[in-house]
Image (cartoon, rainbow, N blue to C red):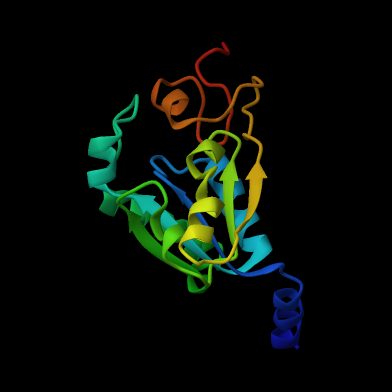
Length: 170
């Protein structure tokens, strides 16, 4: 009975394979919503995690954990949420990862903040003879103060990973 239920759910997914990418430093509610959206749309999801090399070329405003630690945190999240076997975790050495060499990817899931990084991907894919990608854009997830949940804000101690304001209540 469970297998039938899972089978039905899989048939209702729009895509066989989607891709999502990020740094995933201090995995927070915004990351979790993004990942859950990708899995709700697709049977499988390629998750690109920025490599230490990529971070060295594109520094963040905050310190970023080593790749292996970010990979481990993401692995734990996927395992806990029973999404691991539907995942492929890969290091990103550039901003587009497998989007320019895999024809089996049907969709890319981005946020309004990261959309610009993939804006021209379909024209490049067309030139390379690859199929057009569907693009799903997720609005930024807001903390309880109405501002976006960002790792930088967590590092500064403004909010926690769920978006709850910290330190301002007495």
